[in-house]
Structure formats: C-alpha cells, structure tokens
Image (tube, rainbow, N blue to C red):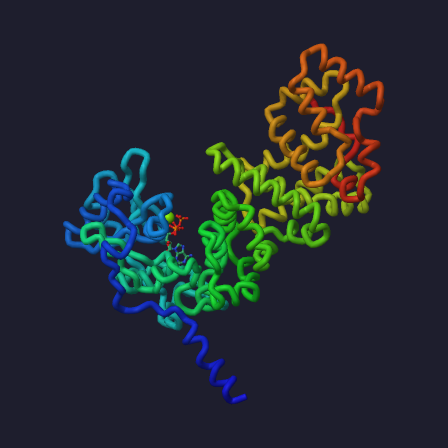
Length: 467
Ligand code: ATP
Ligand code: MG
C-alpha cells in the first residue's frame, strides 16, 4: 500500500520528459542532416540573423524529417531576434499574426517562417495580470506570446522529436529533450508532463496522433495514457482551429491510418460527433465508407492529384444523415424536405465542432443532392446530369457508396457505361431503362429491398433538376 502510494507520488516526475537546461550537442558525424538537403533560402535566413548577432536555428519538422531521411514540407527558423528585429534584417519580410507574431520571409514561392524564441506562460501568475487571464479553468493556455531563451523555447514545444535545433554554420544539432533518442526508437513523446501539456493545449493530442501516423511511430506509454480521459477537452477549442487541424490530419497523405488512431484514442467523437455515433451504430458500412474515402484521398495525394475537403466531409458525415432524415420524417416532413432539412442541420451541427467554410459546405450539399439525382435518368435527365459541374464528384461518391457495401442496383456501373457510350448506345440505355422500370427514380424498387439505413438516406421522389 505504502509502496504504491510512494510510487504514485514519484511516477509523474519519473515519467516526465523534462528538458535539459544544457543540450546534448550532436556533431556533424553523428547525425544524418546535410546542408545540401536544406533550402538555400532557409540557410541564408539563419546565417544572416547570426551575422547580425542573434541566435538562429532551423527547428521543428524540417530537422525531424531530415534526421529521418524524409523530405521536409517547409523550413522553420527560431531566433532570439524579435519579429521587428527580424523584419529589419530582410527586405522581403512580413510580420504576420497579431497575438502570436511571426515573420514570413518571402523568396519567390518559398516562405521561410521565422519565430522568436518563446517561453511557456508560467502557471499561477494570473493574479498579477488583472486584465487577461493566460489560462482558463482547465489549464488551457489562452495567451502564448511570452518571449524567452532558447532553453525556454525547447521546453514549450510539443514533442521531443520537434524540439531539435540545427545550426547550419556548425552543422550541430542541439537536443534538449531526448528527441534524437526518440527518433532512434521511433517513438512519439510529449515534452514535460503529458497531462499538463494536453490541458494547456488539447490540440497537442491531435498532433501526437498525426505524427504517429505520418512517421509510423509508436506513441510512448505516458504520452498515450492521458489522451482518452482528456479527449473531451477538444470540445473547447475554437471550431476554426479544429477545422485547420482536421485538414492536416486528413490531407497529410496518411488519413486512413490517422483515422484508425483517432478512433482508437476516442478523438473522433470530439471532432465529428455525428460521424462517431453513426460509426458506433453501423461499424461495417460507416467504417467502410469513411475509410475508403480517406484511403482514396491518400492515394490521390501520393499520385500528386488534387483533393477537396468537401468530398471528405461529405463522406465523413453521410452515414449520419439517415437517422436525421428519419427524425425529420417523424416530425411529419415529406421525404424531400426531410432530406434537405437533415443535410442542413447536420452541417450546421458539424460547424460547431469544426467550422466548415462556405466554399466547402456548398459542394458537400451538392454531392449529397447528386445522390438524389443520379438514379433519375429518364428523358433528357441523364445528359443534363452529365453536363452538371458536380457530376464527377457525385458519381465518384456514388461509387464510394457502392464500394462501402450499399446495393444501388448497379447504378454506378450504369453511369460508368453511359459516360463511355455513343449517342445511339445512350438512347438505347435510356430506352432499356424505361422498358424495365417506368418510375422516374430508376433503381428505386431495388433500393426499397435494402436496409433501413439505405432507404433513410434517400429522399425518394426528388423533383427533377431545375436546369
Ligand atoms: P509539419 O510542418 O511537417 O506538419 P511541424 O513539426 O513543422 O510539422 P508545425 O505545425 O509547422 O509542425 O509546427 C512547427 C513547430 O512548432 C513544431 O515542430 C513544434 O515544435 C511547435 N509546435 C507547433 N504546434 C505546437 C503546439 N500546439 N504546442 C507546442 N508546440 C507546438
Ligand atoms: Mg512546419
């Protein structure tokens, strides 16, 4: 009993990855970073600041990725110079951000982001600050704009692997937080006490997951443990910031694996509550649909093809629609208005968690609307649909639904054939359709044989498009 008590008192300290006040210096021969792999512009920025008498290093993702033999997405610089001092050194520099000032140094299309060393906002100093509290009642940091030393800067970073500093002039890597060791062991560890770090900024839980998926690293035990119990803290994060994070999670090229980790760590529900509920109700279909959409996003990114968040959000939310349509119908709304109403309310509800800008919410609705129209192919409708700018997205989405296990009576194949067919073949295809089924909705009868979920997702009898 006593032993357990002593252990529980000691363990938070033992498990903390407290940064050292003096770094381990990793010499050129002991790491794999080479100047030749680094953006010339980034090196110039660092050297120019150093010549002006400031400390300056490459830091964060670029050092981590180069130590792993990966190509960095961009190059970030950390310096002792204030944003104004940085701007004074470069003609092509712009200070951005009001609360959290950064400097962007522009070189054609490349932007080198320069941040001044920052310190953790000390806990418990709120009383001295009468105007603005720096933390809320759950410990979340509301302000993060205190400048500090290099040591402070290392301490306030999230993961050990993100707190490595590279000096291009000496080619040394400075390691304050066992980052090199974690890279070696392929492990994600939070700096400091993970619970406190997540309370300060719950988005760090998503970052831990994101890098675990991207790098295929394990999440170290003490870094992993508090995530499930603290997952709910994400509900307090402004929805615009969560939208940005969701894009990073799902458009980073490792969305399918990221999704699995989000589910495993109970982080899907605070981001997509309706989708998480649908996944629970129908793990097979909803899980298939979401994972297929994410896997195809990963594939497109790997092939350098464009991706749109609208398609992803349409897929993430689709399995949550039927229950809402049913609710609206139970309130007495006919099928079409029930569907429209359900789509609207689902998007509005989702926006409270992850803001969805209008330029994406419109196409989401259009992709869903297309699902109503694609079964209705009689007369001139099929040709009109083909000309619709949303046809492609709607058709891709239809195939996704079929791949996920929905039985739409061969509708996807029909559209695949129709696109390749000659004019006369197209006329035959429409005629055959009329021969088989004289209702406007084409495969409606077959769909009626399907599950409740499928029927619920439809608003049968949608009027033909207005075009
Ligand atoms: P990538 O750009 O490849 O996604 P990155 O590690 O550079 O990865 P950024 O979001 O660009 O990620 O952040 C730059 C650095 O800032 C990180 O490496 C990390 O050290 C620090 N950082 C970012 N977000 C946080 C956070 N919420 N809490 C603490 N440190 C953070
Ligand atoms: Mg970065």
